[in-house]
Length: 384
Ligand SMILES: *Cc1c(COP(=O)(O)O)cnc(C)c1O
Image (cartoon, rainbow, N blue to C red; front, top):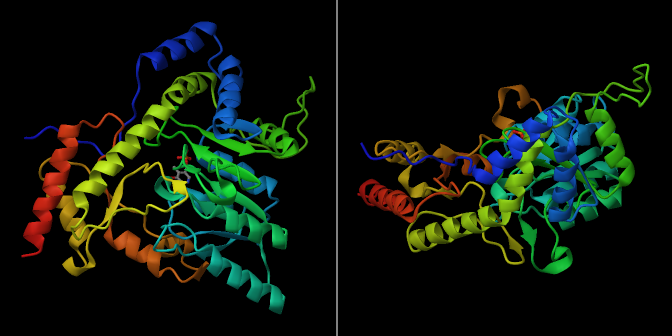
């Protein structure tokens, strides 16, 4: 049997072991310790945010953002329909009503223009407006944060960026030139889960330029406990802080992040070359912004019929190559089936035809060639 090619695995080296050992030796293994603040500072510098607060997960960072947006039961939150369910879970924890907004086929990210039309319609007839808009930079691809921020500001809505999948992605032209994802909204959230572009085992980061929001985020993440000797808590908080051991891992991974991003782009360029001129559709490459291609994902041709994506996945699995379907859109998730949805057809199409291919940062050229050849073979066989 050919050796297994995984979808995306963490890339942990000696530096990570060194810093984690240092954290262990220091005795500060939990949420107090030098690595937490060092990680926050270095992370904020990296993405160009004024403040960063380390959290136990990306979902925790998003939940804190929902709390700070003052999302209350029955408030509406507009969120991308085509995403991993953690995006909306953060709003659901606050018992929000969701407005699920479909993606654009060109970017796979939220169709902000259609959200604008819906908000204008609602405003005109006096219907409830969203309290927060959550855009998602899907698979490393920047969403249209500029248009979303403009819309949010016009209507006094809070913009939250779910940048969990897109650390390192940037705009290179236009009004957001030189900016990182996660720094355009009022608040941003990143994830360091095991398969994300860098990992702390599990963890996340909350970002903002607003010092007050940053202080509140830190407070909420530490059980809203005041610095009083008598255990005084001024609101209902969470145990959402990152541990010092995880932060040590984060500091080491952050040092290597530029290398990871470069490798993801190299892998993406090779796949894109290999599939050019075939019926395989490659992920968006938009002018003025640079995706990190976190999970490199293709769309199988619609001409091969409804089951084609699963067929290709099975065909790869036969030779020990791991691949994964893209997400089922939120409006198709049983607990969310009653939520309002703007269109949804693009998300359904991405779900039906989307497949993520191996793209670990230590993927060898030989292994990538194996994947490419196998996809070509399937195209030939399935087209006959
Ligand atoms: C991974 C992910 C999250 C959640 O991050 P965790 O650290 O796993 O909690 C949120 N949103 C998106 C889009 C993600 O892919």
